[in-house]
Length: 161
Image (cartoon, rainbow, N blue to C red; front, side, top):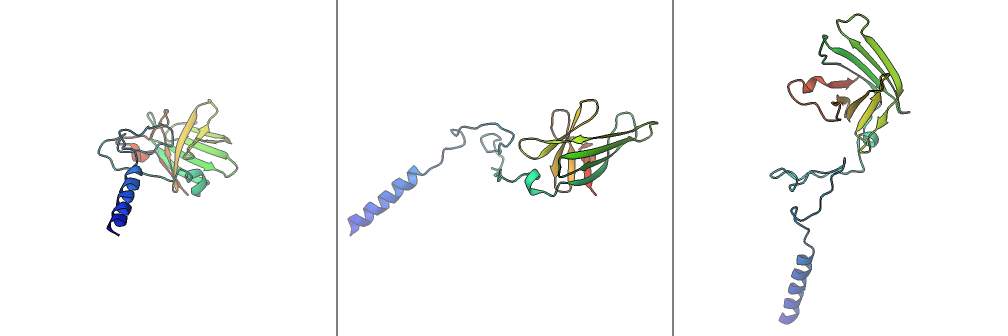
């Protein structure tokens, strides 16, 4: 009886030992738009996990009209209204406050990035404005598609109406 119990305990330890996951230092890491940050990438940071099947495009009620006043280098601000529709179309109206003839309107089709969290809105000059889609708000991104940081970061937000 003791030999059987001992054999079962040893077998359990062997199986548990074989089931160990690779440590972050030895696990291969692949960088993609959907990469989840791990301790190996940012030492001392908490491990984050996400369900990559759910994103802003398929999980949020993103369609609608968003408004805000974005910073402007040579005017009082850019009053921005962006209407995004379920059929992939948009209407963007920008009014440069304090400027004569400062209102511009663009419409067309927008595109989602592969991660399903950012839309790209083209204008007549073939420039593209990118917005990170969050719950009831859009965050204007810089030319490289990165969130704007610094003192004015909270000014680059459009709120859903």
